[in-house]
Length: 429
Image (cartoon, rainbow, N blue to C red; front, side):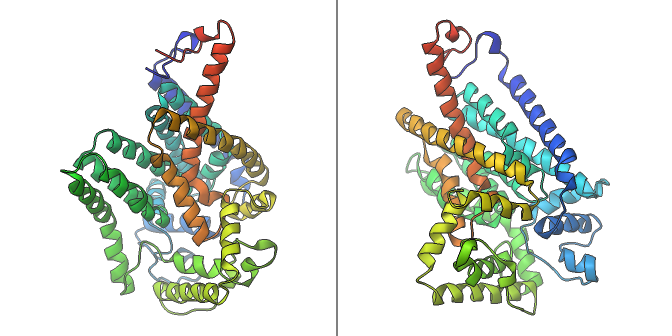
């Protein structure tokens, strides 16, 4: 069996994975206590924090900042609900501070380390799993992400579990596994709404393969599970806003802020500006409709610029356009500048290794689309919206696993080239 450890490195997989996971948690806690807790909480992070505390007190999903600052109580679906709901459990237990919520995010990110280890093992064997977990544990981009009060910490964990579930469905096509995959994609969508695209990119294609007799049933199982998990939230938003809302209302602010003069021209092309949103009145859903129309109308009126802007957005989300500016922009998302810059350098190295890992998997005849679906999702999301590092989170999971495949292959070649090295690192069991 490929990837089994021998010699001094011979430890039970679960023990080593557990130790790596603990190391990942310690690293995140240290970062939060030394660096992140001194960063001002604002914007979406402040909204998540306040909403979690309001949920714990029984106020329900209300617009957090207007309620906290002005006492105005109105229903909200500004963000998908899953991340603040989990934070509210911490608040209910007494952890209502910024640091407590950051530590909760660190726990979610630590879960990502563990899940990435399992995904890596499925993709390339035990050694790949352990290397993938180690990379995830100490990858600065993931550490910084887990030190913020934003939903990407939970999103990374759910994406890793979703990709693992997709591999399981690939291995053994069944109704149950298709349903699990559909449910996990729904949980991803309840964390970040763009993950809904994985229904088309991942659930249906993977359920399709594996034999004609039950193909339709597998697709149906995945799709039905997806909508069953989403149903309570979708029904709630329709009732409170008296109109259907697909998971969150922030598609309106997204389109308006990403389609306006300052981000179609000049040095901020491809980014997002809150000051582009025009004054709107009504319910949150009604204002979202106005802003959505505003953004679409601007894009239509400036159609000649759209291809260039979309291209820059994609380059930005992959950090190939003004990366230093992108790192500075990320400080608005409660990220430490120096840590972000270091993380960007590590990202370039991992991306190069990931491309090599993809080539290796192709040569081995391994399924590629499952790991590629996340980068495709990120690229589509960046093209439609705007490009910043934190919106690349889903793809980071695939990058880490593919890089681990490459690292193990390089270590195996090194073991062959150095006499005696294969006693420590044996490629074959």
